[in-house]
Image 1 (cartoon, rainbow, N blue to C red):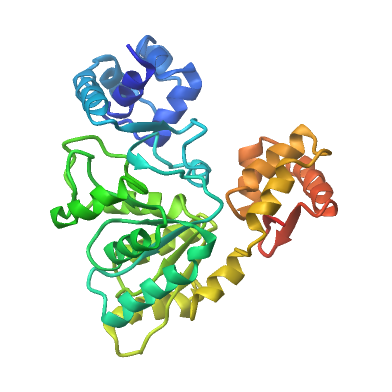
Image 2: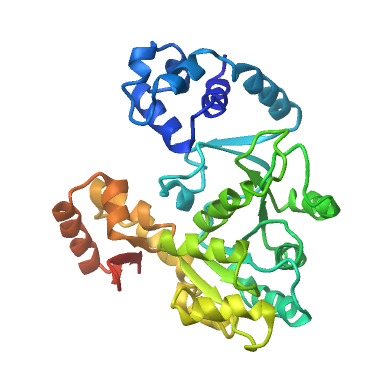
Length: 363
């Protein structure tokens, strides 16, 4: 059997989530090896008890994996394992990132600029106009636009991105055997040519309420920043913004009138310092440093002749945008003192710049 078969089967075993699946994979070296282990060996892995071990060894998830493999082959579905080079690098750094992703389309998740645009399912005309003007303003930077394919702001962002020729990805809370809402099927079909549909959920997974916060963590995690166009005080957009803050991402919110229901969430995010006030697309470009030299500078760093292997490792981690010191320590495997020394050397070489709050970014 293909290793992908066992990866799907492992993740679909009862009591096995993304983090536990990663622990098991790292312990045994492959998903297939997990199924060949003894119960006593499996329960040595952190977070895995006898019930979970028995679920794995029962191989009850094999029929699910077989069904998925058939669907993948028949529908040209791309799969991305969390250790794959093509897996979204920004998302890869998050501990709870999906073990596996399923994708239909044509897109590079790891472009220099990736922006999430989210908001209410019932935007005002002003909100729609603000969304469209934002994307039109940043067109020259050719960002990947990420949203959730939902009614309202999400579909507005996808449509405008398509009209502008920008790649756009819809992250959905269900399997790839359906599109929800169904009315967005024509837009989803267009997105397959320049972007696509991404999910962590297997086929026959309905868009149940508990799936949407999971979907939102992918939207926030795979992006440089999240823009909240319009939202009420509670809802999915607020969850996405909160997650983005947890992931050390930039969050922007467009303010509105105090009495407007779908401005209250944006105003609250700004008031509580959970989002930067966004008055124009220029604000976003300035804060995110999306000047015209961004990609040229990245190429200069890539070709820099004096980088050691350790310096190159840090530079590669920082390519997705600003990263907190704690994440640098975790993802590099270096001690704090060692990392501090390397960061200082890179700063002297004008390759890395320190930011407030122990964050670092490429110059």
